[in-house]
Length: 141
Image (cartoon, rainbow, N blue to C red; front, side):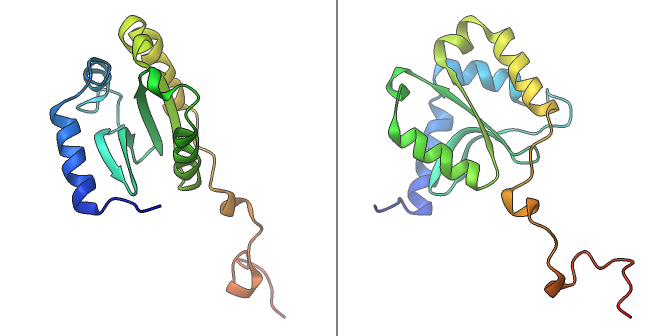
């Protein structure tokens, strides 16, 4: 599977920023200018080889606004797995939910930002004595 080049992704992201869907406009109105306290979101962010609708890199949170073409989409499942493996949580909202229940969507986003992001699976591993991890205060005598 050939992935698009960075230049192609950048051109596509710029086009998407200039031509948002109504749901993306509504979400951006909620997320822009640090409206969620200290959380900064970027829209149409490249996380190669993908472009995500909205990303808060500090919180490791991605928000997607989806139309009906995304129902039971295997490509979205692979994409979400890739993004989760890269350390992100992915929230997907149907466009009609964003447009008809903006308050509920906003509440779910706020809850996700308040809930601490679990560490990457590699952080769950015990310290490595070979690299000197976990030896603070330990006696080597």
